[in-house]
Amino acid sequence: MKAGFFIAALFAAGAAQARVPLAEVKPINDGLTAVAIADHIRIKCDDISARLVVAWRYIGQLEDQAKAMGYTDDEIEHFVTDKKEKKRVAALAADYIRAHNADPKDPATLCALGRAEIAAGSSIGQLLREN
Figure (cartoon, rainbow, N blue to C red):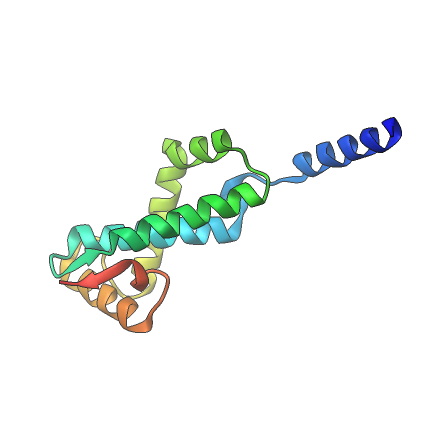
């Protein structure tokens, strides 16, 4: 029994070491970027609001996914509150906005992007609603 416990402990330690930083986990990154894009749109566009309950559930699902991948509450909290990570995700959001023919500072183009995302039912659009 001791040998089995030792092997299991070594396997668990190896799995923990094999994890990549949360910043490199695509589904988590994509989800946080979608939240950042939706948040930016709803702040700049008076005609669009956040679907807050949907957004909180979505964020909770991302957190659950990270936990299922073996990340601890402390690792997740550090990742989402880290200033460098917030800037990185904001830059990804701005890149997405520009790539979709909108200007991060222009409410008219952001409103158009928001409406397009809502109409498409995208992960971004599901976080938004027209007023």
